[in-house]
Image (cartoon, rainbow, N blue to C red; front, side, top):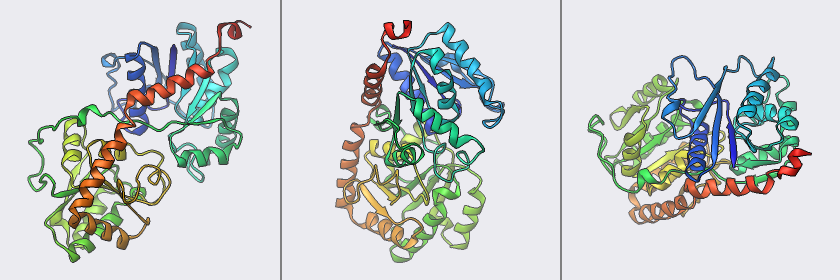
Length: 383
């Protein structure tokens, strides 16, 4: 098949959506399909190494606005189709990419698939509240041949926007290969971080991620049982200084290590050697890849009872679920994790088995089966 993946954000930017598009494009190319990624040029401080990727990337001008003159961006899509007549257009946002695909649908005569990664359709979110965004999103959903939902959170948000949406549930995947064998300890890693003796947070330092709640819970758990473990906070963001100040006020800074942004083998080592991984998000998650990466490393999760995490973490089987905004419940889970070695091992083994069902080859195969089911036959295009 000839497939176009259209996204408003792609590598070298690093995030869930960018990694999903990259993984799908790689798998399609590996399986012999002709795939191209259409994306805006990256921000100036980022350098795109598109030629090093195993699939083609076509760039267009960055979105100056997703509110005004958005219709102009049909033309890069139509121009690409003239040179590369793709049969399937898979847009990785309902708005703006899905809306643009819907505007071009009659001229492209390609099957239109949409995937939302959560932020563009979240009720009350900044993106859906922009003037015109809701009506454009509804237009895209009505015209799509299929809409892929990656989690219960996105299914709920899609149904709220347009109840008649044809939803196909396909979760995101995980690259299992980095976790198939142990990686070497990063030589530059802080020596206070010892294998099996730390809890890992991995993500952006943003209020939505609840790291401030984690620090409160960590202080409470240390007061109850000081096991000598560390809290490793891997990630960066605008909250870093405030979180460091909070750890200082709570007098737990000696047991907290801010590692900054990590990637590649360094991230793999941290996941492989953590005692568990904690994700105390206070608001919403669509499909956090961190959970699947922790599971691939055979590590249980401590997460909050919110849509997106409840879909992935099974309390008492692959980890612990606690109430959001509750340092008390989170501290109790941290304490249980530190003393209940049998549960920790069982949860880790269950987590690894769960990850095996989410390998990218099988997830890509489910997408390809969907494409085949809605691809328009040649006679339909000619007509």
